[in-house]
Length: 190
Image (cartoon, rainbow, N blue to C red; front, side, top):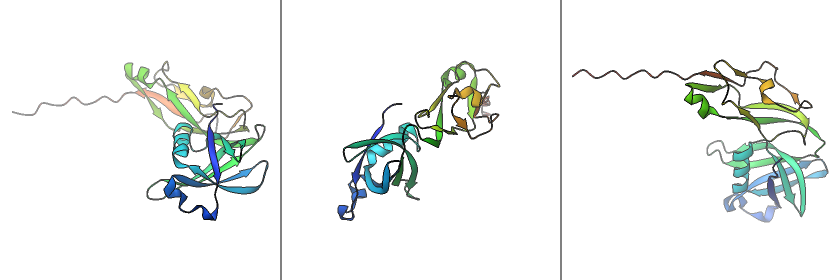
C-alpha cells in the first residue's frame, strides 16, 4: 500500500475561522482512541487524497507526533458549492476487519478504440470486506486485450481470496461493446 499521510491538527474553539484559512473540520475515532478527537486537516491535502484514492481512502494520520492507520469513513460536502466541510476518519489496526467501497480503475481503453470497441462501465466500485492490510486502495482491470461481449465480473477483478465481496458473483461492472457508428453528414442541398 502506498503510504498516504494526512496531517491532523488539534481543533479548539479558539481556532477561529479555520475553514477560511485553508482547513477542513474533522474527527478521529476508532481503535486505540478512547475519546474522539476533533481535528482539522489542510483542505488541499484532503482534496489530493480523495482525487487520487477515492472517498474511502486508506490513510496514515499524523497527529500529536504519532502516526496511525485509518480510512476516510465519511466526507461531508456543502450542498451548493460541493466543497468538503467535514471529514470522519476511523483509525483501525492492520488486522481489523472492515468494509470499504474500493474504486475500480479500467486501463487499456485506447487499445479497444483502435479495434472499434469501447468499454461500457456499469459500476465503478465494489464493496469489499476483509482485514485492513489486505484491502487494496484501488482495483485495476486491463481491458486492452478483451473482445466484443466480454464482461467484467468479480472473477475479472483478481481479488485476494481472503476478501469477501458484498455484491453477487454475476454482477457486471463493465462490458466490451462496439463503438457507436456516427451517421455520415449529408451534403446540404445547393
